Length: 147
Image (cartoon, rainbow, N blue to C red; front, top):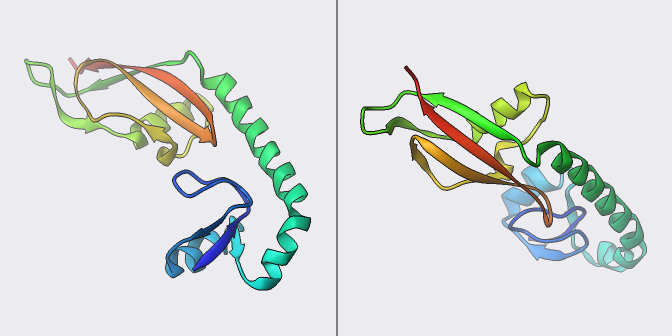
């Protein structure tokens, strides 16, 4: 199904683009959440008129992302986890754990926005948080062994 994106979405496209997605994704998520509209003839014709509104909405989201980025930049997160004597964790550090720690600091981040390589040992690591379009933050993760 062809849709017109009303906001930029990771891995899909930027606001105002016409993209093809699976019918279920469009009907069950994108359209009900007002992230996209069906790319029919009427909507395609109205797209030029709506571009100013879409761009203004997009700029608002970029500004909000910049604000959150300014709160996150330079944050170090310390995670204490069970590990063996060699420093290997009994489980992996997940995006949800990082999201929960940020939430406890008053910063709400969707776990899907956090990109990291699998962390399965103690040490220092870096994670990237993609807020919106090209707005990204880097945070330092310090993983310690639970004593």
